[in-house]
Image (cartoon, rainbow, N blue to C red; front, side, top):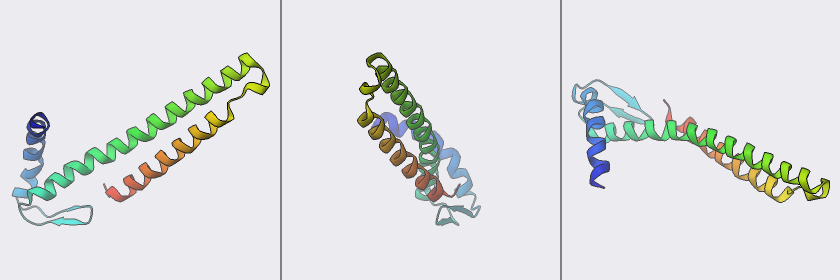
Length: 111
């Protein structure tokens, strides 16, 4: 926990320069009009969540693609009756859920 805190301190100090200067900024639904450090922390968290959501979309699509390719290659080895439809269906459900949730996060972040 201490390492995480020490890692965030430089980011917060850089981002809080804008807040300490009194520059009005809009962060999501929060307006920063003064030296509000919590709003600056929220701005930092928003950046991490925003880019993390894009990474989650990419990871879900890549993982889903390789899972489906693996299931189809196994089916080719066993013949047409060996297609793992349940594996393909569950992969598609998980990928769609992750993509929808990540898009909702991205649309909320207002960056």
